[in-house]
Length: 241
Image (cartoon, rainbow, N blue to C red):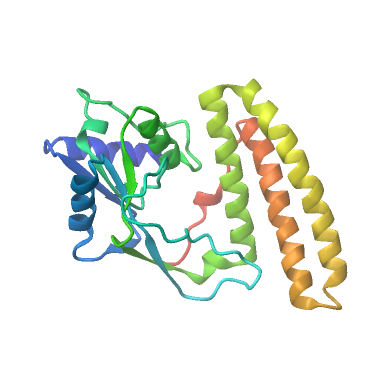
């Protein structure tokens, strides 16, 4: 939630830091995590360093689910956005005498971290990838059920569209997302029907096409929901213990 993230930034600033590290509450950092992020910032003259998350699944994801893992890229590669699950930022970015940035508290249902770092990049801060600064995250079985995976796709599309509404206005966002949503829902609907008909004859291939179509439908309907500014309840559900 953006409120908690902003409170964390305020608490950090009370100690007059040069740098602030952010990690999710369900993750574990390797012993040299911060050292690697900080060293990379010094080497490449960057103000933001983002590293990878090693996900440990309690139960494998369904065979039709396409992994969201990023492709490997060299340390020092410049990036334009980042999440808050593994990141080091210069205090200048959040200090009132610097950029003074905060998480947008209107983004209560996702993407507030992506939005924050997009604005950070737009303000001129150099952001880099650090390929060996790992954190680990346990993924409970409940998070890889069909319902939760599809809900996550819907949430991401909803918050992504709403973010553009906030930054560029509803009119410009509509010009972009209405045609995109129509394409997604049209091809998603076709893929779902074809996949469903194919399943009795080629089960795995049919299921992949069927769920590919459902994901397209979730993204298309999520884009429309975001244009209307309707919140999504994905994070209201607690996964694991």
